[in-house]
Length: 273
Image 1: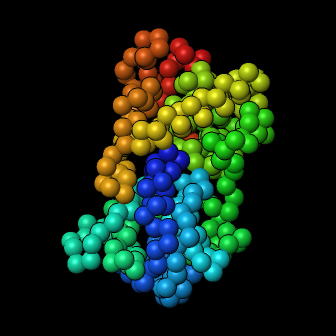
Image 2: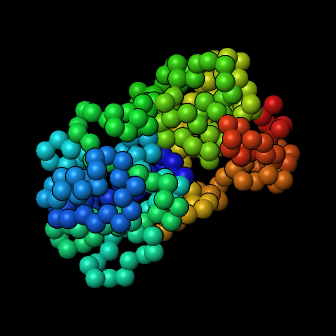
């Protein structure tokens, strides 16, 4: 699933392309992707709306429209957004088409169809509970070690807590594993066992790995591509993710894999005791 660096990469590409553009029509070829309102109301309400800016919250893209509406797009496991010319051949699994007033089409392509979209009113995100309950953004200036400590209260495993979007927004399986390795924290450690210095190390590692991944267009380990159809390159710098049985770059111990919160989890048993 695209995580914060991948979604932010797409946001940065979309914003200059879509600012000021007007949506002249919408095709919905897979109605179940539209979570709110009904697909018919969604299409009607979007027609004629001008896009003011493209924002992001966690793993959600937020297209702010004139009239106080927000077009929300979540890419799910395999979704992507691409520009196309009218009349051109569309990729397989194109489920949404946004027609723009300059003649271009913005396509939502999703082979596995775990994505979602909605049209919400500014200030009311309740129709999408996952968006409404997001925790703080880990790359914002106000996200301090103290803020992280408040978000990671309780007794659950630290890896499971990092995957909980209501605690911290935008971090998924890849960057949880990478940050924990850099911080030297075992993914099965309980939150109430973490010392203050460890929380500071985790805070620093989270921000470092997210920033580095963003600078390289994210990680392409499965389906992720940006709006130009290009892959990110940060997967070449992964220290533990999907490296089970390979030596740790830091100490040489073989990387191991366990399951935490139902997700494959990679760690170094020597660096992360």
